[in-house]
Every structure is written in C-alpha cells, then in structure tokens.
Amino acid sequence: LFASFSGTNVIDVTGWSLRANRGSQIVPRAVDIYDPSGLASEGEIYLGSGDTLNMYSTQSAIGENLRLNKCLGYLENYNHFTPPLPLNCPYINRSEISHLTGVCQNLIASIGSCSPPPANPLLAPTDYSCKSFLATINYKGCFEKHRSDSDFLSREWRVWSGSRFLDPSHDNINLFDRQGLLVDTYSY
Image 1 (tube, rainbow, N blue to C red):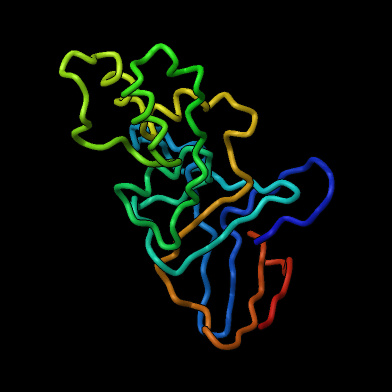
Image 2 (tube, one colour):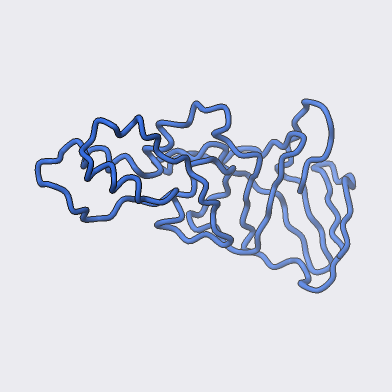
C-alpha cells in the first residue's frame, strides 16, 4: 500500500483487506517504535501521505510486524529478515570517540553501518573506556542515542503475512477498508 493522498491526515489501515484471485489477507497490527527490550506491543498502522506499507509472504524473523527506523539494521545481524532490513544506521561521529585511544578509534572507524564490533577485539586489557563504548554499538545503543531524532522513524511499515495469497504471474488485487468499501484496485 502506498498512501498517495494529500494533506496532513493519517488513515488507520489496520483491518483493511487485500483480496486477490487466490485468497485474501487482512492488514495486521504492527510495532510503531521497536523497543530494544523486544517487549513493544503491536498497535494500529497509520499511514500519512507518502507512507508505504509493504506486505511480504514470508514470516517476520522476530515474529512482529514493524515500522522501520534508522537503527533497525542492527537486528539483521542476529535475525535474517526476508527481505533484509535496510542497513542505513547512523555512523558514529568522530567527536564522540576522540577521547578514546587511537587503536580504539581505528577499530570503531572500521566497523560498517549497522555492524556490531568484533567479539574479541585486539585491545589492551586495561582499555576499559573502549570496551565500554564498544558495548553501545548495537540496536539498543543506537536507539537510545537517536530515538529523539526528527528522522528516527521511517515512512515505511513492513508486515509479514506468512501467506502466499497472490498469483506470482498475474493477479487482480482489491483493497477494501474495514467497512468493506473498495478503496483501490491493482492488476498485474
């Protein structure tokens, strides 16, 4: 689903249905802001102008539907989503690590976006500041640092239906709201 209306309104699409030639699927609930504890509850999916809701026939690697945010790529290191989550996590700013040893700074600079530090980095046993900083390079650390950023939340929601209700070759899909009124049709 792609919300292509204008204005500042948002629409709750939870419970809407997609009906195809071989079956149907209800738009489920999803986690708006995924908490690092994993205990975030699913709620309604609200789409504003330009927002997207992508539905996949596979299963969620963590058993939940999600609104993407700029730190979620860290989850891909331990859970393999299909399709993969975007790996566009914020890079660590040089000014944040300038107080650390040169060896530590080089190590941190070598870590890719959304990647955890190596399990056993070659550091001096007494480099506690570096070890402490490395422990924050993960989803929780990114979440705590960036959750207040104006661009933290993506405009994309992902839901996994676990159902192959679409014909891979050709299909006619009808989108109905909760009252059963036809909202849109798409054929391929």
